[in-house]
Amino acid sequence: MGYGLLRSMRAAAPQVRLVGSDIYPDAVGQAWCDVFEKAPLTASTGYLDWLLDLIDRQRVDLVIPGIEQDVQRLSDGRDRLVASRCRFAINGALLVDLSRDKWAMHQALLAVQDSSRIPSYLSGDFASLSARLGLPFILKPRRSYASKGLLRISDAAEFARHGKLLGEHLLAQPLVGSDDEEFTVGVFGDGEGRVCASISMQRRLAPDGSTAKAWIRKHASLDDTVKRLCAHFKPLGPTNLQFRRDGTDWKLLEINPRVSSTTSIRTAFGYNEAAMSLGFFLHGKLPVQPRIMDGFAVRFIEDYVVHDRDHF
Image 1 (cartoon, rainbow, N blue to C red):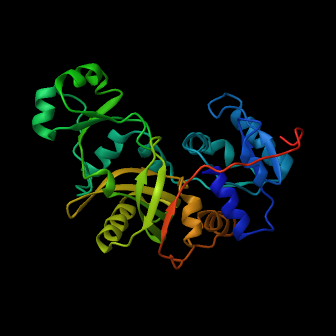
Image 2: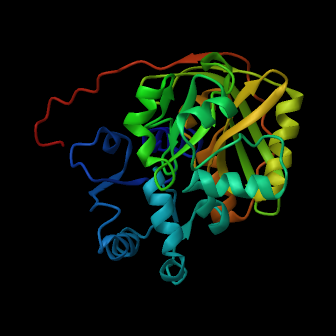
Image 3: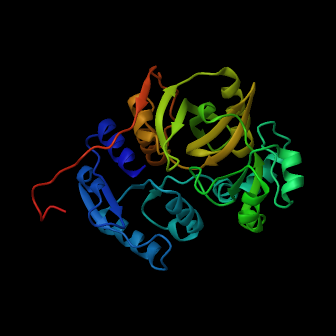
Protein backbone atom coordinates (compact mmCIF):
# COMPACT_ATOMS: atom_id res chain seq x y z
CA MET A 1 0.00 0.00 0.00
CA GLY A 2 2.77 2.43 0.90
CA TYR A 3 4.70 1.77 -2.29
CA GLY A 4 1.56 2.17 -4.38
CA LEU A 5 0.72 5.43 -2.61
CA LEU A 6 4.17 6.88 -3.27
CA ARG A 7 4.21 5.98 -6.94
CA SER A 8 0.62 7.10 -7.46
CA MET A 9 1.28 10.45 -5.79
CA ARG A 10 4.47 10.98 -7.78
CA ALA A 11 2.62 10.28 -11.02
CA ALA A 12 -0.20 12.71 -10.21
CA ALA A 13 1.72 15.50 -8.48
CA PRO A 14 5.47 15.47 -9.29
CA GLN A 15 5.97 18.74 -7.37
CA VAL A 16 4.93 17.21 -4.04
CA ARG A 17 7.72 16.44 -1.57
CA LEU A 18 7.29 12.87 -0.35
CA VAL A 19 8.41 11.89 3.14
CA GLY A 20 8.32 8.15 3.78
CA SER A 21 8.86 5.99 6.85
CA ASP A 22 9.15 2.29 7.57
CA ILE A 23 10.29 0.11 10.46
CA TYR A 24 12.91 -1.42 8.15
CA PRO A 25 15.88 0.80 7.26
CA ASP A 26 16.35 -0.97 3.91
CA ALA A 27 12.70 -0.70 2.78
CA VAL A 28 12.66 -0.28 -0.99
CA GLY A 29 9.91 2.34 -0.74
CA GLN A 30 12.54 4.94 0.13
CA ALA A 31 13.60 4.80 -3.51
CA TRP A 32 10.40 6.74 -4.33
CA CYS A 33 10.71 9.23 -1.45
CA ASP A 34 12.46 12.57 -1.26
CA VAL A 35 13.09 11.96 2.45
CA PHE A 36 13.05 8.69 4.37
CA GLU A 37 13.17 8.03 8.13
CA LYS A 38 13.11 4.76 10.02
CA ALA A 39 9.97 4.48 12.16
CA PRO A 40 9.45 2.80 15.54
CA LEU A 41 6.83 0.08 15.80
CA THR A 42 3.34 1.51 15.47
CA ALA A 43 2.32 -0.15 18.74
CA SER A 44 5.23 1.33 20.71
CA THR A 45 4.45 3.86 23.43
CA GLY A 46 6.53 6.58 21.79
CA TYR A 47 5.12 6.22 18.27
CA LEU A 48 2.89 9.33 18.30
CA ASP A 49 5.68 11.43 19.82
CA TRP A 50 8.00 10.28 17.05
CA LEU A 51 5.40 10.98 14.37
CA LEU A 52 4.59 14.48 15.63
CA ASP A 53 8.29 15.30 15.82
CA LEU A 54 8.79 14.06 12.25
CA ILE A 55 5.87 16.20 11.07
CA ASP A 56 7.40 19.31 12.65
CA ARG A 57 10.95 18.66 11.45
CA GLN A 58 9.98 17.84 7.88
CA ARG A 59 7.14 20.36 7.65
CA VAL A 60 4.68 17.64 6.65
CA ASP A 61 1.28 18.90 5.46
CA LEU A 62 -0.56 15.60 4.99
CA VAL A 63 -0.14 12.10 6.43
CA ILE A 64 -1.67 9.17 4.53
CA PRO A 65 -1.37 5.93 6.53
CA GLY A 66 -0.41 2.92 4.45
CA ILE A 67 -1.18 -0.04 6.73
CA GLU A 68 -4.04 -1.21 8.95
CA GLN A 69 -2.08 -0.75 12.16
CA ASP A 70 -1.27 2.89 11.39
CA VAL A 71 -4.90 3.69 10.56
CA GLN A 72 -6.03 2.34 13.93
CA ARG A 73 -3.25 4.03 15.92
CA LEU A 74 -3.88 7.41 14.28
CA SER A 75 -7.62 7.03 14.83
CA ASP A 76 -7.05 6.28 18.51
CA GLY A 77 -4.74 9.28 18.79
CA ARG A 78 -7.07 11.86 17.22
CA ASP A 79 -7.10 14.00 20.37
CA ARG A 80 -3.32 14.42 20.22
CA LEU A 81 -3.16 14.89 16.45
CA VAL A 82 -5.73 17.66 16.29
CA ALA A 83 -3.20 20.24 17.50
CA SER A 84 -0.67 19.33 14.81
CA ARG A 85 0.06 21.57 11.83
CA CYS A 86 -0.69 18.55 9.66
CA ARG A 87 -3.82 17.04 8.15
CA PHE A 88 -4.45 13.29 8.41
CA ALA A 89 -6.19 11.14 5.83
CA ILE A 90 -8.10 9.10 8.41
CA ASN A 91 -11.57 7.61 8.05
CA GLY A 92 -14.38 8.20 10.54
CA ALA A 93 -13.78 6.81 14.04
CA LEU A 94 -16.96 4.68 13.98
CA LEU A 95 -16.01 2.88 10.77
CA VAL A 96 -12.41 2.38 11.91
CA ASP A 97 -13.67 0.82 15.15
CA LEU A 98 -16.16 -1.45 13.36
CA SER A 99 -13.46 -2.63 10.96
CA ARG A 100 -11.35 -3.96 13.85
CA ASP A 101 -13.84 -6.71 14.72
CA LYS A 102 -15.85 -8.69 12.16
CA TRP A 103 -18.41 -9.55 14.82
CA ALA A 104 -18.99 -5.85 15.52
CA MET A 105 -19.48 -5.27 11.78
CA HIS A 106 -21.86 -8.23 11.64
CA GLN A 107 -23.90 -6.75 14.49
CA ALA A 108 -24.00 -3.36 12.77
CA LEU A 109 -25.26 -4.96 9.54
CA LEU A 110 -27.81 -6.97 11.53
CA ALA A 111 -29.11 -3.78 13.14
CA VAL A 112 -29.98 -2.28 9.75
CA GLN A 113 -31.09 -5.64 8.29
CA ASP A 114 -28.74 -5.30 5.32
CA SER A 115 -28.93 -8.16 2.81
CA SER A 116 -25.13 -8.16 2.33
CA ARG A 117 -24.68 -9.61 5.84
CA ILE A 118 -23.16 -13.09 6.05
CA PRO A 119 -24.65 -15.26 8.86
CA SER A 120 -22.08 -15.45 11.66
CA TYR A 121 -21.85 -17.35 14.95
CA LEU A 122 -19.61 -17.12 18.00
CA SER A 123 -20.64 -20.44 19.51
CA GLY A 124 -21.77 -23.93 18.56
CA ASP A 125 -20.47 -27.45 18.12
CA PHE A 126 -19.59 -29.10 14.83
CA ALA A 127 -23.01 -30.76 14.43
CA SER A 128 -25.02 -27.59 14.97
CA LEU A 129 -22.76 -25.36 12.89
CA SER A 130 -22.54 -27.78 9.98
CA ALA A 131 -26.35 -28.10 10.00
CA ARG A 132 -26.73 -24.31 9.86
CA LEU A 133 -23.85 -23.47 7.56
CA GLY A 134 -23.27 -26.56 5.42
CA LEU A 135 -19.91 -28.11 4.63
CA PRO A 136 -17.33 -26.88 4.33
CA PHE A 137 -17.88 -23.83 6.53
CA ILE A 138 -15.24 -21.39 7.62
CA LEU A 139 -13.71 -20.20 10.86
CA LYS A 140 -12.41 -16.66 10.52
CA PRO A 141 -10.41 -14.49 12.94
CA ARG A 142 -12.55 -11.67 14.28
CA ARG A 143 -9.60 -9.28 14.06
CA SER A 144 -7.70 -9.77 10.82
CA TYR A 145 -7.64 -8.66 7.19
CA ALA A 146 -6.73 -10.00 3.72
CA SER A 147 -8.13 -13.48 4.55
CA LYS A 148 -5.34 -14.03 7.09
CA GLY A 149 -5.97 -17.00 9.37
CA LEU A 150 -9.10 -18.22 7.55
CA LEU A 151 -9.84 -21.94 8.04
CA ARG A 152 -12.10 -24.19 5.96
CA ILE A 153 -13.75 -26.79 8.16
CA SER A 154 -14.84 -30.04 6.49
CA ASP A 155 -15.07 -32.54 9.36
CA ALA A 156 -15.42 -32.86 13.13
CA ALA A 157 -11.75 -33.65 13.66
CA GLU A 158 -10.68 -30.45 11.95
CA PHE A 159 -13.22 -28.44 13.95
CA ALA A 160 -11.96 -29.99 17.20
CA ARG A 161 -8.47 -28.58 16.53
CA HIS A 162 -9.70 -25.00 16.25
CA GLY A 163 -13.21 -24.80 17.71
CA LYS A 164 -12.02 -23.91 21.20
CA LEU A 165 -11.08 -20.46 19.85
CA LEU A 166 -14.63 -19.81 18.68
CA GLY A 167 -16.03 -16.74 20.41
CA GLU A 168 -13.23 -14.50 21.61
CA HIS A 169 -10.92 -15.10 18.64
CA LEU A 170 -12.88 -16.83 15.84
CA LEU A 171 -16.36 -16.66 14.31
CA ALA A 172 -18.08 -19.22 12.09
CA GLN A 173 -19.61 -18.41 8.71
CA PRO A 174 -20.87 -20.30 5.67
CA LEU A 175 -18.52 -20.52 2.70
CA VAL A 176 -20.05 -17.94 0.38
CA GLY A 177 -19.55 -18.05 -3.37
CA SER A 178 -16.29 -19.28 -4.88
CA ASP A 179 -12.71 -18.06 -5.04
CA ASP A 180 -13.40 -16.82 -8.58
CA GLU A 181 -16.33 -14.68 -7.43
CA GLU A 182 -14.47 -12.26 -5.15
CA PHE A 183 -14.63 -8.52 -5.81
CA THR A 184 -12.85 -5.49 -4.42
CA VAL A 185 -14.47 -2.06 -4.57
CA GLY A 186 -12.72 1.21 -3.87
CA VAL A 187 -14.80 4.22 -2.91
CA PHE A 188 -14.00 7.77 -1.88
CA GLY A 189 -16.62 8.87 0.64
CA ASP A 190 -17.57 12.39 1.68
CA GLY A 191 -18.25 11.42 5.31
CA GLU A 192 -21.98 12.07 4.89
CA GLY A 193 -22.92 8.84 3.15
CA ARG A 194 -22.27 9.80 -0.48
CA VAL A 195 -19.88 8.00 -2.82
CA CYS A 196 -17.89 10.60 -4.75
CA ALA A 197 -15.94 8.09 -6.85
CA SER A 198 -15.57 4.33 -7.10
CA ILE A 199 -13.88 1.48 -8.95
CA SER A 200 -14.84 -2.22 -8.98
CA MET A 201 -12.58 -5.16 -9.78
CA GLN A 202 -12.98 -8.90 -9.77
CA ARG A 203 -9.89 -10.43 -8.27
CA ARG A 204 -7.93 -13.59 -7.69
CA LEU A 205 -5.99 -13.85 -4.46
CA ALA A 206 -2.35 -14.71 -3.87
CA PRO A 207 -1.56 -17.16 -1.03
CA ASP A 208 -0.96 -14.24 1.38
CA GLY A 209 -4.48 -12.87 0.76
CA SER A 210 -3.43 -9.94 -1.42
CA THR A 211 -4.69 -9.41 -4.96
CA ALA A 212 -2.66 -11.37 -7.52
CA LYS A 213 -4.82 -10.68 -10.59
CA ALA A 214 -7.63 -8.20 -11.20
CA TRP A 215 -10.20 -7.47 -13.88
CA ILE A 216 -12.17 -4.25 -14.17
CA ARG A 217 -15.86 -5.14 -13.75
CA LYS A 218 -19.04 -3.09 -13.70
CA HIS A 219 -22.24 -4.42 -12.08
CA ALA A 220 -25.17 -2.12 -11.41
CA SER A 221 -26.38 -4.35 -8.55
CA LEU A 222 -22.94 -4.18 -6.90
CA ASP A 223 -22.93 -0.39 -7.26
CA ASP A 224 -26.34 -0.29 -5.57
CA THR A 225 -25.09 -2.45 -2.70
CA VAL A 226 -22.02 -0.26 -2.23
CA LYS A 227 -24.09 2.94 -2.21
CA ARG A 228 -26.46 1.45 0.37
CA LEU A 229 -23.60 0.40 2.66
CA CYS A 230 -21.88 3.76 2.32
CA ALA A 231 -25.14 5.50 3.23
CA HIS A 232 -25.14 3.41 6.44
CA PHE A 233 -21.47 3.70 7.42
CA LYS A 234 -20.55 7.12 5.94
CA PRO A 235 -16.92 6.47 4.94
CA LEU A 236 -14.60 9.45 4.78
CA GLY A 237 -11.92 9.35 2.12
CA PRO A 238 -10.46 6.19 0.56
CA THR A 239 -12.29 3.06 1.69
CA ASN A 240 -12.13 -0.51 0.47
CA LEU A 241 -15.04 -3.00 0.46
CA GLN A 242 -14.59 -6.72 -0.23
CA PHE A 243 -17.43 -8.89 -1.55
CA ARG A 244 -18.25 -12.39 -2.68
CA ARG A 245 -20.99 -12.91 -5.25
CA ASP A 246 -23.44 -15.59 -4.10
CA GLY A 247 -25.80 -16.26 -7.01
CA THR A 248 -27.45 -12.90 -7.61
CA ASP A 249 -26.56 -11.56 -4.14
CA TRP A 250 -23.52 -9.61 -2.98
CA LYS A 251 -22.15 -10.60 0.42
CA LEU A 252 -19.83 -8.27 2.33
CA LEU A 253 -16.60 -9.86 3.55
CA GLU A 254 -15.14 -6.76 5.18
CA ILE A 255 -14.72 -3.01 4.98
CA ASN A 256 -11.19 -1.62 5.20
CA PRO A 257 -11.25 2.11 6.07
CA ARG A 258 -8.05 2.93 4.20
CA VAL A 259 -6.29 2.94 0.86
CA SER A 260 -6.31 -0.50 -0.73
CA SER A 261 -3.34 -2.76 -1.43
CA THR A 262 -4.51 -2.53 -5.06
CA THR A 263 -4.04 1.25 -5.10
CA SER A 264 -1.28 1.08 -7.75
CA ILE A 265 -3.48 -1.11 -9.96
CA ARG A 266 -6.37 1.31 -9.53
CA THR A 267 -4.13 4.22 -10.51
CA ALA A 268 -3.19 2.40 -13.71
CA PHE A 269 -6.88 2.21 -14.62
CA GLY A 270 -7.52 5.90 -13.90
CA TYR A 271 -8.52 5.86 -10.21
CA ASN A 272 -5.78 7.58 -8.17
CA GLU A 273 -6.60 7.40 -4.44
CA ALA A 274 -3.41 9.24 -3.47
CA ALA A 275 -4.25 12.24 -5.65
CA MET A 276 -7.86 12.24 -4.40
CA SER A 277 -6.63 12.25 -0.80
CA LEU A 278 -4.27 15.14 -1.50
CA GLY A 279 -7.07 17.20 -3.04
CA PHE A 280 -9.65 16.42 -0.35
CA PHE A 281 -7.77 16.35 2.96
CA LEU A 282 -5.38 19.20 2.12
CA HIS A 283 -7.49 21.43 -0.10
CA GLY A 284 -11.09 20.42 0.68
CA LYS A 285 -11.79 19.35 -2.90
CA LEU A 286 -14.17 16.41 -3.27
CA PRO A 287 -13.16 14.09 -6.11
CA VAL A 288 -15.43 13.37 -9.05
CA GLN A 289 -15.88 10.03 -10.75
CA PRO A 290 -12.93 9.48 -13.11
CA ARG A 291 -13.19 7.56 -16.35
CA ILE A 292 -12.17 3.99 -15.55
CA MET A 293 -10.34 2.19 -18.34
CA ASP A 294 -11.17 -1.43 -19.07
CA GLY A 295 -8.51 -4.06 -18.63
CA PHE A 296 -6.72 -6.75 -16.66
CA ALA A 297 -3.79 -6.53 -14.24
CA VAL A 298 -1.41 -9.12 -12.85
CA ARG A 299 1.20 -8.68 -10.11
CA PHE A 300 4.70 -10.07 -10.35
CA ILE A 301 7.97 -9.86 -8.42
CA GLU A 302 10.36 -7.19 -9.64
CA ASP A 303 13.97 -6.48 -8.68
CA TYR A 304 15.23 -3.12 -7.45
CA VAL A 305 19.03 -3.02 -7.48
CA VAL A 306 21.32 -0.35 -5.97
CA HIS A 307 25.06 -0.51 -6.70
CA ASP A 308 25.94 1.98 -3.94
CA ARG A 309 26.21 0.17 -0.60
CA ASP A 310 25.82 3.46 1.28
CA HIS A 311 22.61 4.40 -0.47
CA PHE A 312 20.35 2.26 1.78
